[in-house]
Image 1 (cartoon, rainbow, N blue to C red):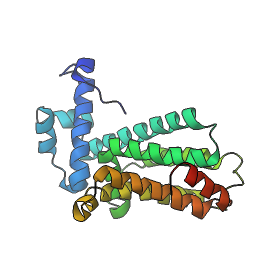
Image 2: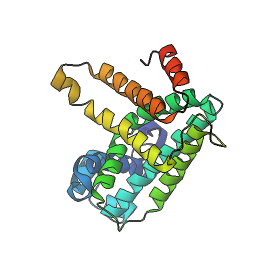
Image 3: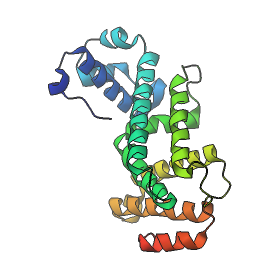
Length: 226
């Protein structure tokens, strides 16, 4: 999602201030979780008065939900663009395009994906409004339809698509997270590691889940995925 600039809104503008608070809060929630995030640090980052967060978001939970809503909107924009640009590609190419595109999106939105991973791992705020996650679920359903085709392309094996989509996206997210420490530990180039990781996701998932293994092998060889 495009980041608004001061030139676009102007410092002191209500929309600009709210957006900056959401971005600063995302950093805090991603790093420290809901309980550990500091409203004081968020206010200091944006340079606003103590009452500003309460004025705009009513509470810490309200700010947290605004961050999640921002994520949901960004994911929706990502899905819209992916489908509009690549809907007509063959199955294998659609799959590869999704993996690379999702890798780029989640890297750009890394604070938000960190929040989602944290919540899924810790189930930390079950009492909060879940409409945002319902919308995220709808975006994932659209991604599944994009990958499987309508009706389901016979190339695919019989899959539980919700589980497949979660496992696939988690494998991409975890691989990117590991790219922070693994290259340092083993003396690898970070960008090379990231590229090898996404290639392995593509290679292993296609071989495991596409019926025509020979077609997959030819595709992998042609696209230098082997």
